[in-house]
Length: 317
Image (cartoon, rainbow, N blue to C red; front, side, top):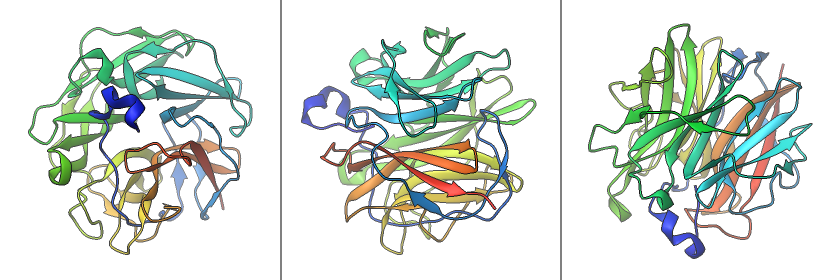
């Protein structure tokens, strides 16, 4: 989530981004993003020309493939969730209306009954604390109704501000949520990737430990944020934004056999365009022939001329 002075009311939620660093993906296997579809993973990421969404204030996106083969992209704009639709995943048209008011960091998954569930953090303009994760459901993916209760509430000093909940169905009776937790402020801010589990996708309990800690080599700095999980034959891969000791910031990845203990890959996935101009907030979707990653570009938490939603493609073996 990014803001400049025009959106000061929302900035307090956002200050999550990144020191310079680098990282690159793992070896082959079957990958799955929780929205269906399995492919063999391979190759390297190639950035695609142009901007997918040329709106600097639409960000923190979540993309799903619909039953008719088209794609819908959800993202936050000025404290509400809006959406775009695409036939090919490259050219997008804005859909009318608002999907959900007062919501930030939307993450949409399909439910077992064919509907849609959106996990989100209350946006700063609601006045609600950002230390909780809520959800809303929809039968058509357009009109969402908030579900009662809270899916997860922060329970430690590390979790003053939460963002970017991403839920993966780990097995038949286990849902795992990867989320970003921030504590402190200014030079003392620490941003970690944590996880919580649930038997039903509704009541989540924090899992012990830290999934990605930016203070542990080969990472550097105090920020690792907005992890997007993919299942593959060897376990789980997380794509996230952070900084690597080799000296470039951008989107990194990490591998885990059990979804809990991760090893950061030693090469970059998507590196920063120039020092301080960072790719952030990855969302990775299986598409015909490979994977497509959607991401934003910002200067730290600030919206700049380059800010928009971009994409990169990775072929399969």
